[in-house]
Image 1 (tube, rainbow, N blue to C red):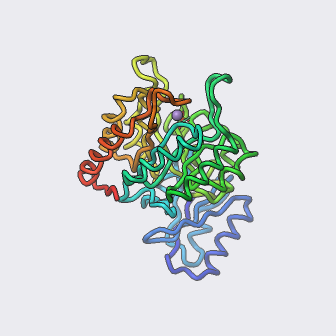
Image 2 (image 1 turned 120 degrees about the vertical axis):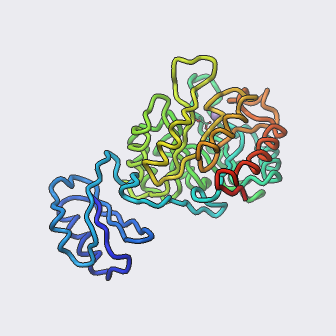
Image 3 (image 1 turned 90 degrees about the vertical axis):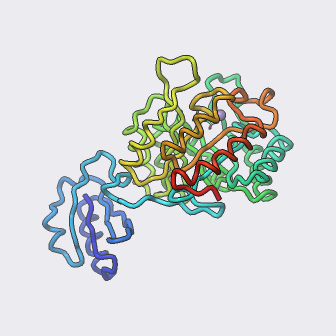
Length: 338
Ligand code: PEP
Ligand code: MN
């Protein structure tokens, strides 16, 4: 349920509403909008009566949210969420480009790639320190050492850092370095992890699971928001289908569907989506054309020798060509690549 109040409602009226909600063992979430102040209700709200709230001071309307996900839905908040970070906005007009290697491998590697990307105009550097791998024998990341390198490179080049967290016990370490914490596809339904990142104040990049529906993805975002972290960025990164010609099937249908159902920003990851280096560019452009708020792309200065996902990592030259094309494409889809 959603209570819409006058934008300039006296504080006491807002508190009265929130106290009434809490007295029924539900949670109240304040969501400031352009026209109204909304109070979103989560929890067992079937026991609340709409009319009880309608009669309270400063209440404009009471709306039942029919979707399974509540805080995530456009019914709860109509205007697009724009996430502000020190390094740029995600959502709204801005087209966000996050680029970098799959994994942080060593100091020289991450510094070289960061310098190239900074010079290209990129604001966010991606790179995993903790890597989820299908094989336990594959490179699983430099862990704390990788975080230290990310911290150094961030200070040197003033780039926002996007890096993955795999388990609740390392959130406090990742949080110190990350401007955006990534929850990878394999952990999209790790509900304990979602609860815990929901308690942080760092924006979360939530990637769609390998066999997750759009609704599953939105319900996972709801876990994070229900804990109080409203800065959630969704990511379409391809799903498993019967098709074997590509690593995954990038479900670009999801982009306009997600845009309709939620106010949260959505990025596309064409690298994992198709998994083949020379086919990343068309899918990146297609993602932006489909309405994505930005892209997360793997780039490596020596992809053939990368320790993970080299075959889908762009060379710096390929990335520069794509970036130039994105600059031309952005205004056509009403976006700005600053
Ligand atoms: C990654 O970003 O390198 C990664 C592991 O992504 P995903 O979780 O989408 O597979
Ligand atoms: Mn990768």
